[in-house]
Length: 430
Image 1: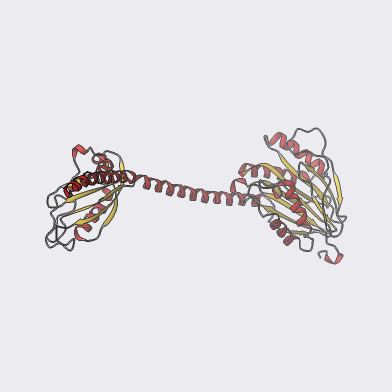
Image 2: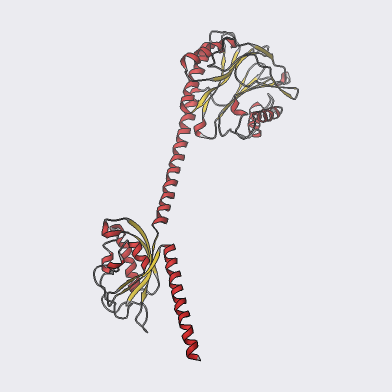
C-alpha cells in the first residue's frame, strides 16, 4: 500500500517542481534578472536562461567564463568589477556592485548591470576567510580557489538599464530646470534693471503745497510677464504737475522698449503745455504710425497744486477711484479709446476737484484683473482697501492695499498712482 501511495505522490512532486521552475523563470523575466555560478577550481560557469537575455548571448554558445567577462565591461568600470571579485574571494558576506557592459564584446548595446555575489565553500568547509595561498587576479586569467578560501561564487545579475536611464533623464531634467530658473532669474533682473533705468525713481512720495503723491510699480511674479506698465510725474511749464500712468501691450523686452518710447514721447510733448486730451491724441498718432502692431492704455492729467483741480483724459484705461468721506467711487470717464486704434473722434477732457481728505487712485489693469477672478471682484477689493488709505500714511497705506488685494499679480505687472489730500491744514507739508 505504501508503495502505491509513494508512486502516486511522485508525479505530484514532479509537478510542483515544474511549477516552481516556471514561477522562478517568470519572476526572473519580470525583474530582468538571472542567477549565475562560477566554480574556481574547475572553471565551470552556469547561467540561468535570463542571464543569456541580459548579455544578449545565444544559449548555444554557453555562458561566458569569468576570465572573459572583463572583455565586455566598460573600461571605466573595470575597477568596480575587480573590487567585486576580490571582495568575494576574500570575504564571507554577499557583496554587490554596478558596472556597464557592451554586448557582443564591445560593439553592441551598452547595458547597466547590478551584480550581487557571495562565495561558495567546499562541502563541509568554511566559507571565505583570508586565503592561505596565492590568488590570481580576479579577471586576469583562470582563478584557482585559494587554500581554505571559497571554491566558487554564485549570485544574481540584474539588468537595471531602464532604471538608470530614467534616473539620468530625471537628473538631466532637473539640471535643465535649474538652468532655466537661473536664466529666468537673470532675465528678470535685467528687465527690472532696465525698467528702473527707464522709469522715474522708485516708489516714493512727492509732497505738494496741498497734496501728496505716491507711486508704485508692482512687477509680475513670472519673469516672462514683465510688461510695459509705466508712470510719470513731472512739472508742466504752467506750474501744474503732469500725472500719467499707462500700459503697453505685450510682455518682455519688446514691451519695455515700446513703453520707453511712449513715455519719453509724453515727457517731450508735455513741455508744449497742451492739455491732456491733446497729448493723448498725439500719442495715438505716434502709436499708429511708429509703433506698429502695438496698443496701449493711458491716463494723463494735470494737477493744479493750488486749487487741487485735476484735468484729465483717458485712453482705454480703467477709471480712477475717488475716496471721499469714507466712500469709494469710480469717476465717470471722459470719452477715449486705447492708443493705436483708428478712431476719428477726439479725446475728451474731464476735471475733478479734490477736497480735503480725498484720495484719488489711478492704476493699470494688472492691479485688478487676474486669471483666477473676475475683474469686478478685483475692483471691489481695491475700492474696499482704498477706504483705509489717507494722505497722512499714503505710502504704508498703499502697501496695505496691495497686500489686501492679493499681492503681486502672477500674470501681469501693474502701476498705481495715488493723490492724497490732507484732511486739515495742519497736516499739510512744510
